[in-house]
Image: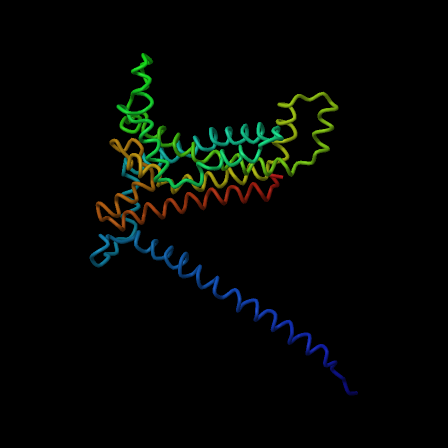
Length: 303
């Protein structure tokens, strides 16, 4: 008995293979770019973290000695604690200000775009400009504090960035000033996606504006809120620019974080291998944060 093969089956199979091949062809440049920019440098950093290298001589493989040194390095642990403080600060104050700003702005019908631009301008200004602006404003002799002291209001003419008690929080304040307007715009956009019917029902039930915000707005924007919390935690691990520009981790490591400590160890003390081990721990911390959020998302926590 003879079997006849439909030619259309072969044409369909060939078309599918061409589609698959074309997908891989278009995907290949992106994969190659990721290999060159991300994967290969990451693997190289892991290898360098196991070497004693100044960046100029031949690397000397020393195994896990750099990580053993990290465990006994008080400056590393102090820097890590500052990263934790930095993360807690940005998970609370800017987020609260962003939510309140978006909440108040959502009730404004006229000139709202003007307020949006005003909130967002600090975020688009270069960090160098922002830091110089606030360095001048908080200058102990020529800044706002000195002017208030001349008016008879004492106590504000202090060296915010020069005191070990205020340096970290002063830098966090400056960075928060530039960042919270971004959160306002993000949360405001999310608030407009909440169904208006929910607000109407809440109003009929006699809920105040704050109660509507607490029981309708916040649950309605929870996916966006959780996403911003995740990004803040990830961004807080490699925090560097504002700290480096304002204090360079000083005074006496009072504002040192992992990013500035890594930079100083690599480019000033020429201990590239040790700096790479710090970078590996930063990557592991970030991976743990992402893993926790992925686990929570699978359980539907942000829904």
